[in-house]
Structure formats: C-alpha cells, structure tokens
Amino acid sequence: MPPPQSDVPLPVPRADAAEADERRLTALLTLAFLALLAGALLRYVLRHGDSGRLPWVVALSLVLAGTQLVRGGSARARRGRLGVVAVCWAVVVLLAPSFAWCAIPLVHTALRLLSVRAALAAITVLTALVVVAELRLADGFDPNLVLLPPVVAALATGVFLHLSRESARRGALIDDLVRTRRELAATERREGTLAERQRLSGEIHDTLAQGLSSQRMLLQAAERQWDHDPAVARAHVRTAAGIAAEGLAEARRLVHDLGPAGLSGGTDLGAALTALAARASHGGLTVRAEVHDETGAGPAILPDRVASALLRTAQGALANVREHARARTATLTLTLLDDLAFLDVADDGRGFVPDLAAAPRGPRGHGLPATRARLQQLGGTLAVESAPGEGTVLTARVPWHEPPGTAERERTFSPGPDEGPSS
Image (cartoon, rainbow, N blue to C red; front, side, top):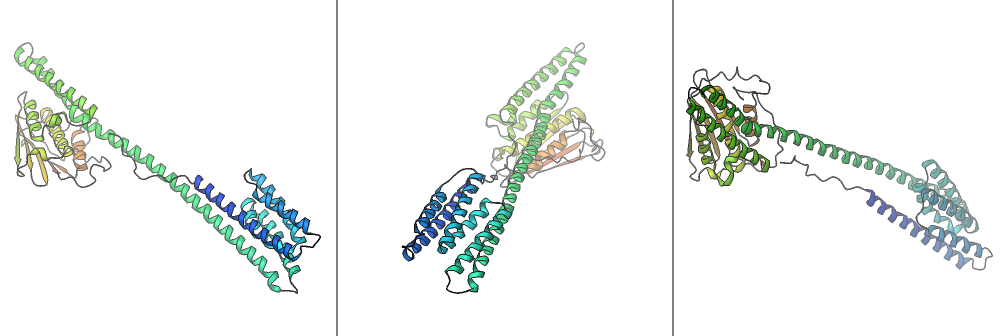
C-alpha cells in the first residue's frame, strides 16, 4: 500500500498572474499618458494655432507618444525610454505649460522602474516643473497651484510605496506557505513510509515468521523421533510441509494485496477460523473454533479490514500458544453483536503474569504490540488475562461498523507494552 499523500493542493505559482497584472498596469499608464498628451496638444492647437512654437510642440508630442508605445526590452532599456520621455516632457512643458499634468503617469512609471531614491528625486523635479507651469498659466498668484501638485505627488508616492511593501510582504508569506506545505507533504510521506514499514513488519510476523517458527519446532521434533518413531516423525514433516505451503500462499497474498490468504476466494471469517484451528491442531495441541452470531447475518458481514485484523490476531495468538504455553487445548471463539465483534483465544497452558512479561524482549516480543496497534487502527482493543498455571485468555474487541474516514486515516503505530510472552 503506498504511503498516504497529502490531499491539500499546493498554491499555483504566481509568476503568470504577476506578469499579466504588470502588463495591464503598463497599458493603463500608457493610455492615461496618451489621453492627457492628446488633450494638452488639442488645447494648445485650439488656443495657440498661430504660434511659432506649434511645430516644436507637435514634434515633441509625437516623440512622446511614439516612445511610450514602444514595448519590451530589458529593465535598462525601459529606464532609458523613461529618461527620453522625461526630457521631452520637460521641454514641451517649458514651451506649453498645459502639458504639465502628463506628469501623473510619469510619476507612477518612475516609481515602478527606478530605485526609491532615484524615483523620489525624479518626482521632485517633475513636481517643481508642474508648479512652474501652473503658475505661468495662472492670471495671478494662487497658493493652491503651489500646494496642490506637491500634495498629489506625495499622496501618489506614499500610496504606491505602501502597496509595494504590502505586496512584498504578501509575496514572502505566500512563499513561506508554499515552502511549509512542501515540507509538510514530505514529512507526511516519510511518516507514511515508516508507518507502512511497521504495519508490514506486523503482517510478516503474524504470517511468515510464525509459520517458520512452527516449521522449525516440528522439524526439530521430527529429528528427535526419527530413529525410534518414524511414523510420528513423518507426520511432523508432513505438518511442516503443510505450514510451508500455507506460508507460500501468505507470501504470495502479501505481494498481491497484503490480505490474509485465509480470507481469499470469498471465505468468511468463521470458515477461515475453522480452517486455522484445523491446521493448528498438531503436536499434542487441539484447537477448536466456535462462532456465536447474534446478528443472524453470519461472519461474512464483517468488513474486510475487521475480518483481516481478527484473523491475524488469531494466527499470532495460536503461534504464541504453540511456542510458549505448552497447552493441550485452545479455543477460538468469535462473537458477533450488532455493532461489535469479539474474538477470544483461550488455552489451558501454563499461563504467566502479564505485568512481569511486559518488558521488551529485543527482536522477539513483537506479536502483542503489533496486534494491539492493528486493532487500535480500527478503534478496537486487546486484553490479556492470565495467571501462572491457569491458562491464558486473549480478547480482541473491534467495532465492525467502521466509522467514516477509517480507511483514509493515517496509519501510525503506538505499540503498548508487551503483556505476555510473544514470538
């Protein structure tokens, strides 16, 4: 199963949107400049059509319009065009003061293309020329003509710089968000990989490792009895061969979909437990399987995840019984209620003190913590009751109506302390 992936989409890169906004703003400033330029030229022609300055004014206006319509180029080329426009505008303002208000688009262009200090210096010069031009047009001294252009220029500059700083801060926040989400996605992938490794280790322990352990015990018993009781030894070898075939089926199933081989082909949990009991009954151990169904629908109603977890629990518990308990009988009891499934694994073996057996045991002692973790993923619990000489009862309790989102829940393992001997 692949590691869980984050389903939150990463923000779309802002380069294309920013370039589109830049093009629209450039077009707006160009149109504003050309409109003001046309209006000033028309006013001059209507009022001073017989002036000797008219050819110069028209020529400079055409140069200004042509320069403004040029697009593209490097930042240095754009700054060069701005310089040409500013010089031509200053000359035409000295010839015809009515061109003064064409400075408004130039202020914004200077702020966009120049550094802050250079832009402020250029705006100061432009504002001074506007004041001079307005005073030349006035019939007399008007204090508003002295105050209005600097105030407008100051407001436009202040708003522009404020918006620029806010945009830079928002850009930094978005970049940080993108970086954080990428790191979070990478962390989730790492955690998912680790969780999947732990889950697979539990699956392998409860299937292949337990089968190999049983084969080893059977083959050792066959070796001891081969000379004086060949029939029993051959029976042990046949049983070991059957367990090996079982392990091969489990390995192939793990490779395909990591489900228990006992549940393949539509087999329900009750039948799988009966078959498991029959296979585990050897070497002096008799195992029975019982199903108590209070739902009337049978074990086939259990979701695949619940049935798989309970079968794995039964396999691991019987492996512990064979290896540690020295029991003569064991019973697998599956109880189905309306919303809960219980699996009890009871044996009449030597028992143990759960608290004393809780210490970690190196590479061994993996079974109960992995079983508990597997059940906890489904909202279930695992309980172990035992005492020396009184056998052991292991009880797995799982709600078989899976809550919404269980299948997508991130798989994490938090194994509790080992409560008893475990292989």
